[in-house]
Length: 115
Image 1 (cartoon, rainbow, N blue to C red):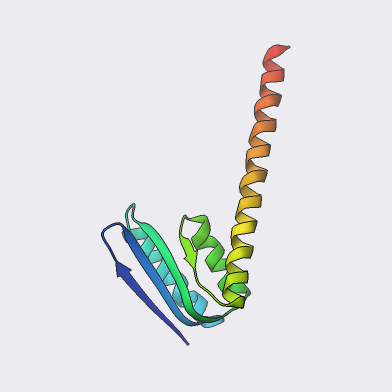
Image 2: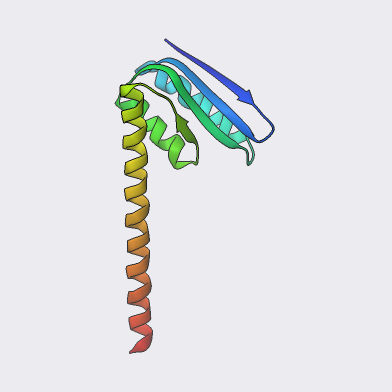
């Protein structure tokens, strides 16, 4: 089971999940997340995972999508902390790779202009 609640503040919105982010509950969370994205404006989103007991691969993919969209993932406990750390490390590596690719493309373009 998964409980989803949204708490709107003046500068931030908290997307709170409680229970298991797994199986059929992931699609429910994704629907709620999509609705929040469509209506939230420019407020920062904090995804509260403090009361999440389990995350499967689909749940982890959804959390990655949320993080990639700019949400801050917060939680505690061995499993949730590891999930958050893995997502943040993967996103950081992806950003670094994108920066290197853009840098190479820029240098390649400059070399073409210098010929």
